[in-house]
Image (tube, rainbow, N blue to C red):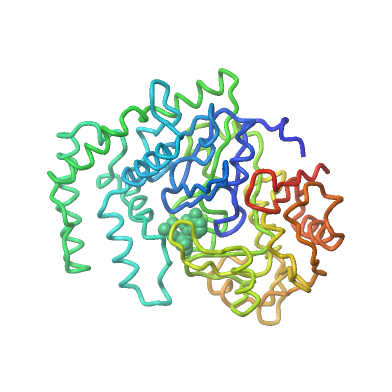
Length: 436
Ligand code: IMP
């Protein structure tokens, strides 16, 4: 594929998160001037290998590891000021400075703030649900923060952090209400008073002040000046609030939310690139039709180091689900796909692909909307021949063992979208541009 031809582009996860978007964004940013986060918050986790080091980022857009690239956190993000400052400081300690006269990180004054009581509520509300009703959230306060955003009167935006007294005035009734609810539901109160929270969060706001601006204006100015923008989504389409495996989803839109979350018109984004692993994973609860809750799943987990970047939870592993990926690709309008972790499947005698579902006496080839059907369906697995040769040194498609190439072609045919990139390891150079 020709990366040079990409206009403003959105990188979309086509699974349940953790698809490897961080590496693809990092790879593409060479050709872009700004990388924009538009949804989610510190629930996202991107692992990027760079200069012999590994960086785990949650809020800072992974593209900023390259000099000259501006990272933008748009209005649609749920921003935890504590986490982002930790990341800014950690990057600084490793020689990557984002502040200064011309900051390389910009945070929307319209983004919503994740407060300590959001994180508390996230954990408490999960712990009170019966085990089979838990969402399995990352406990980063994302759901409660977005709930307050929709509620409006109980929400705080990044711009609110900059005026201490106004912040305290807003916080007082919010805390009064939260405490009533927390006492009734969980028998406890928010640990801090409105004054304490106003002091602490105003101080955080002051530390972030040089990064805070109207990013909507900034993006439009950057684009008008000929800069190219890369939009980086958190989680994946299967965790989309409207289109994922509801209610076992995150609380924001994936690819379909890019315009609203970034503050740009829909036609602005010229291409959508899907990212998906050569097998399937999921963290947290919820339906996962092609899951392998057995030795094979464990073997994939070990080979792919499938443990969460954000929570270190072991990820559930399974075969590639072509029905779910086709659904996610169709929804997000991707014109090309990056297939990640192909190297992880080396050594499997045969590799399964879910090509349909059995639901009672019916066969489904589309993803069902209802969670009860999603739980009930049985995967129909087709097996492809495996390969034994280590793929980590492969740089061109013709160097792939024929079984690996056949596997890629089979997936491409099942999804109906060209696979433009194949990744065979965590480093930038372990990437094959399929060029077809
Ligand atoms: P929340 O986003 O923390 O509310 O979690 C809701 C669900 O989305 C849980 O199953 C999480 O594990 C999952 N989730 C949220 N963000 C990500 C991500 O970036 N990668 C993988 N799973 C995620």
